[in-house]
Image (cartoon, rainbow, N blue to C red):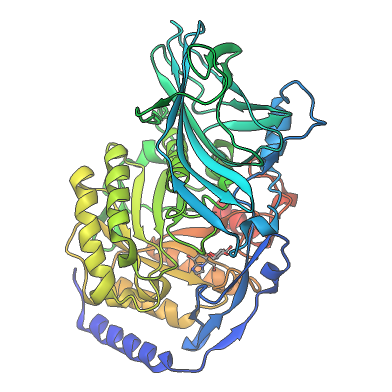
Length: 569
Ligand code: IDC
């Protein structure tokens, strides 16, 4: 990469300024928007502290409050015998109720058990079979919890365009997160219907869905039907008790749907494969191209926002062309991250990617390192993960890989992040030769100048710059300009209009300065976050559903602002 002597001098100056402030006293404060929530309260001293305006770092000590991982759907004895209508399903699935505090408390005793048993419910006459793969089980406050991946195989002799699975569940059974299907529970009947993107199953083909559950008593899938036809009961002998054990692992085959706009007006149909030329992101024709869009919150924290209508609204109404799927790697031990729920995280991630493939949107697969801040803590897991996803999605120009969100703590560029990147990038490149890869930079992705001083020697690499407008102002913009002048390819894969805790007040004057600067240089950006958590950075009010087609009353202050920005720029 070309760098002018001026750029080098500027970088040195920045480094000196940073060192100068590193030893200063840190102030602490509490974000009340978060502490006012009613869900699980986890005290946390390790949440991101980020340098404040005028280079005075601020440690934000705040109370992290978590919503339930999804839409707890609880069965109720009053519920009608009939499966609820689609409308009811939608409402239940998006109400974003909070979970019971004691069940997500950081002190809750949670024991995980590896489970490899797969249950096969064989078809009697319908020609459908269900393969239930139990991925893990654990106990939470005396309740039985677990996760299943289910494969439906259609051997009925003809294709189907939609599917409905019904299965008997214990009283008090709840779905704590579900993916690739719409879940309702009525009495002791759970109904799972396809999502709009995975209803079709060719003859001989498969579709999959998966869920995590919480139940007062053991759950083992017994009697089940597919499209009203008995998919047999437990075993071929009709036993409704324990499922039949088998060593055959169920593979969820989510065949990415065909793009909905083959004529070519979706972002990906128009701009195709992206690459990096100098400091610029360029499209398939070599023209500068800017990605702008929303980042999800943690996909396992707000899974209901990973849905087709929401993304379609972001594309068509918000005028955005990219979605960033933030998958927390390891966060504060309540199960809502990759390390605690690999299968659930992967299912949601793949669901989000598949929706973007269908909608012709670009999608960033974000390995959301935040805690711990050193990406080398999980190098092996990252290698495994990126090998799998890059193999699966190698043929799609939609995909951008972000291999580390925000290194922090002691993670230095040359000592830790760069060596980590040098291990992960070749793994991706082996499967996907030329995808764009974003690499986070030290100090919560602010020290882009360190990357400029010691860049990676691969093509199609961009470096992450993150800012929160109420915290990071002129000094970080100056650094940005210097790095642009030095030829560094920068991608703002996350920014907020509020302060670095995700709370405080929005500073739209600063946000506007930032976005004008990024637009001037054609730097891509994603706003944090696509969620309805009661915190300033959420684009939606807690009352808003996740299902897209939002109205003005659904938007938070920042949601209304950022939507307008995307629409008008
Ligand atoms: C915040 C979320 C918040 C969550 C917290 C802890 O908004 O709900 O409780 O993480 O994990 C980042 C991170 C991003 C942070 C965000 C706001 O990339 O994960 O999300 N932030 O603090 N860097 C700077 C700010």
